[in-house]
Image 1: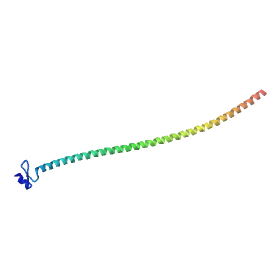
Image 2 (image 1 turned 180 degrees about the horizontal axis):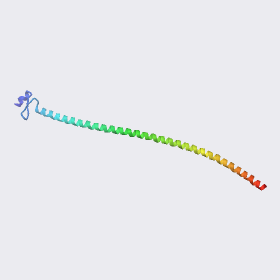
Image 3 (image 1 turned 90 degrees about the vertical axis):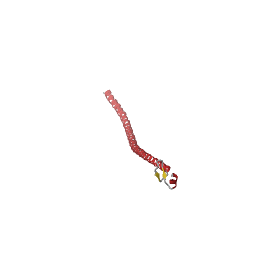
Length: 131
């Protein structure tokens, strides 16, 4: 009898229920539906994981950019200190040269004054000897 129904497009399943679709096709359709739901759930979970990953990567990127800017700022500050130190060193070297020139002048003046003193001492000595 199930063969007669099968020819007319009606089927009887294991529970003796009249069906329009072949029971095997209905079972396969239900299995496919279950697999599709599982796939959809997995895809949603995957999407959630990707969003979390993207969020973490973006926060790391923001932190990296912040640290990069901080490093550039520190680097610029070090360059400024280096240039300032070079400027101070040049200024000190200039002062050293000025002081050395002044020292040379004072040495020459000292020698001149020593010569004058010795000449005056000679004059005084000669004066005492002549008296």
